[in-house]
Image (cartoon, rainbow, N blue to C red):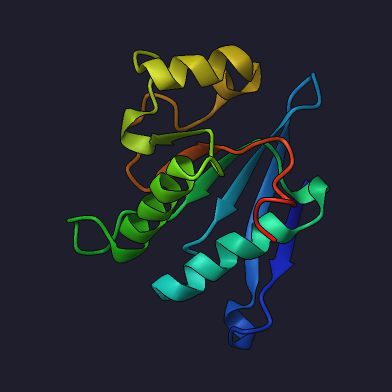
Length: 149
């Protein structure tokens, strides 16, 4: 299933945040949230992330793959840095349970192993063991509506 979340504060071509829901046999979902679509600014990408967390429960879940890109300079982009800093801050505040950078998303990484053990569908993720620094896997509490309002 695919869907979009509207961001009315952006220009027409930048208003939609793309996400796709990948269902597993247990009905647990991995949400893939593409923050880099349309080449947004850092502030627009952060706003898109919050918009997605405000979305109805059908459009969010406990585990989210955030696609933020690596940056065109080859040194790590501003969106990647800002999103990862935000995830680290939310983790310190208890708003995020676990954060696994894409370059660590591996069968050998302990945090990755823990997530895959609890969410079996993650073992089929196309980015597992690919060292993809342009994405981050994040585990949120089951109900984000009270946390991010």
